[in-house]
Image (tube, rainbow, N blue to C red; front, side, top):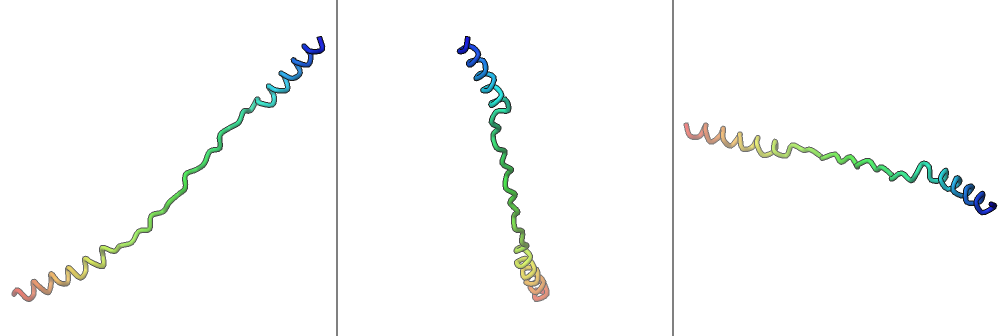
Length: 59
């Protein structure tokens, strides 16, 4: 009878210990910001100036 009472007490203690369970940690993804730069603006303006000079020279 003592073994039955001990087994019942251990089973109750074990079930309450694991009632919540072990939840896996949730990690949020890292936010990566892309650095934007308008490097095309440095190329387009001299090309347009060259086109204007070429058009003026051809007249």
